[in-house]
View 1 (cartoon, rainbow, N blue to C red):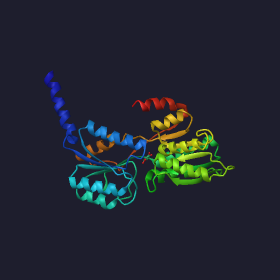
View 2: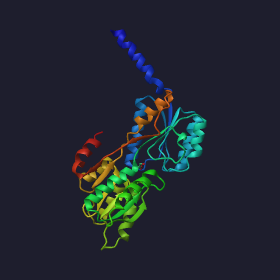
View 3: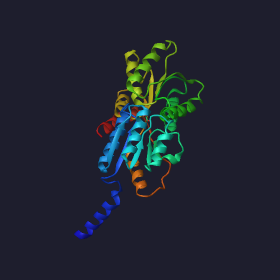
View 4: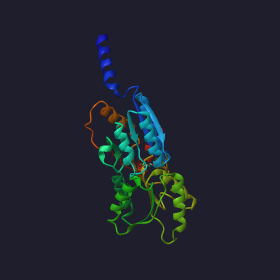
Length: 313
Ligand code: AHR
């Protein structure tokens, strides 16, 4: 009986060991601009630890040139695989060709890259356009399509900004009385979100107030909420606040009535990325070019419960 148990254990170990000790994975991360990004980095590090993977983590501080340097250094070190969470979509072909020449598989996670898809194994990501559609539908429903909107965009050239804006704009185009009246980038950070909102509020005329702030992520929305409060306006009531991510701080803001809705973006992208790498290094090249994740719309109604759940994780 004891022997029977022992043999499958060895077999299991042998099967699962293609990503064991010696496997080295380089991960080029965008930066730490938002709470969502920090959770994503932690999820990848935790998953690497649990799988005994030697993870080489590089924080690009929101600069593509740092990412390119990091990827070149991973190639020089001869890692077994590379994960890239790209800052922007363009400018990736040369370095991805270098990885391909070195026979190092690359997995793209989160934002997209504009290259031929033979330069990477797969992309694991949410449908950013759909996020924009979902949050715009919520807002149009809430305001019966009458809304002057202040938009705080994410990083210029990043898929999350481009596609969220496209989805949102597609929906509001159907409502003649809904309009984006101000739009500027807040680079996905809380500090910039606040700064941009302060300038919007200064430029706004008293008889044409904003009905809503549409921020491309929770972090900028949280900065904008601060600016709105400091201007003596009630966020969540006088100005509706909508965004994307679903970070604990934003659930808290919704529970307190300061924010209205968000679309959840899963930060747990480490496990699917390592699963793909495991499969690929194990010889299975039959991997789809896009692996999608989805998220629901959350509002004030369930915010307190969601905050409890998320902050105790
Ligand atoms: O690319 C995804 C976006 O990047 C997240 O919505 C945002 O929080 C992060 O900075």
